[in-house]
Amino acid sequence: MNETRQKPIKIVHTFAKVIVVIVLLLGCIRSYGEYLNWAAAKDAQAFCGEIEIGSDITLSIANFQKEIGFVKIEGGKSSIRHFGFPNLPELAPKDGHTFKFPGFLMVDAYCEVSLDQNGKVISKRSSVYKPLKI
Image (cartoon, rainbow, N blue to C red; front, side):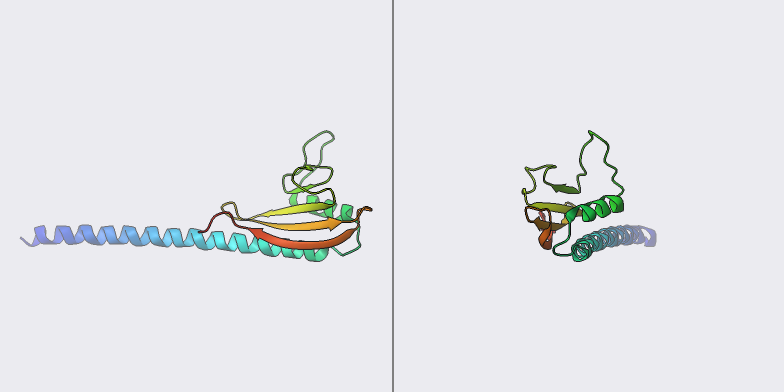
């Protein structure tokens, strides 16, 4: 009689352990995702902070592409993490460039730079885009 009583208790304990492991795993995934989003935002802020008002944007573009490991091939496509005129003019205004820092689950941080007619930086700002509310 004791064995039949202990069997349901064992099942409940095993089920509780599985639930605890699942909750801990989901918590770890969410924490890591929040860290990735925080790091992307900090990277965007740091990159924007390095760009000086009045400077030429070409040096910043070259530094960014070197940092992400992008090598432009003649006649090849542009980097998906940097867009600006004349590359992808439908995504960036003629007088600006946008640098993308990917986070977790479609959360991205951006550094947006506005230019004058001579290609000199007149303003900059960093932002985070969160399409999902998690």
